[in-house]
Length: 209
Image 1 (cartoon, one colour):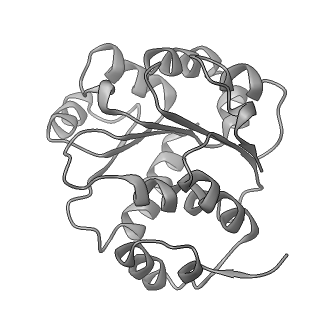
Image 2 (cartoon, rainbow, N blue to C red):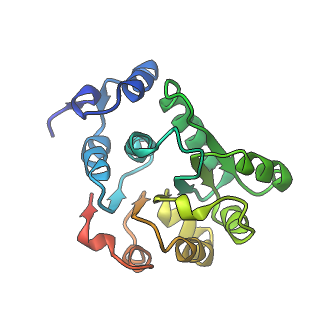
């Protein structure tokens, strides 16, 4: 596959600056495939092994679409563990380092929920969290889900493996007004199409990478 440089992907200068500060110039195969497709606005199902730059493959186009002037939640990212939620939030913060007004928040079990609620009320465009804790916040309406336009399920197969089937289904069910969904998984799984079709348009009509 031909090598693709990040400066060839028509990204915002602030995002390119963040990518360069992280020491990256060339996109990995999953990044070069996923970034243009996600930016085009269609649903995406992608399979890529850990260590191939999966987080940036959805983090970069998500940041490209986020409006920093709107202090409402625009993106929800589900991760199977709090460790991964923290890791993803840290990488997206680095990518958005030169984007003024972007707030990234990680929410997960074992952390003071009142502290999380206060942070949510303060406004965060991107929220990364475990399925159970994200469900808690959605049920209690601790942030405005109506403004969410993008859902990413990272390590989809791991979320299923760790028993989050019902929680993920409930999160998707509460976000039926989504304009776009993105599902990424480390390995292929037969249950992806079932979840992809929840709430209306199926990503099967979008792109599978």
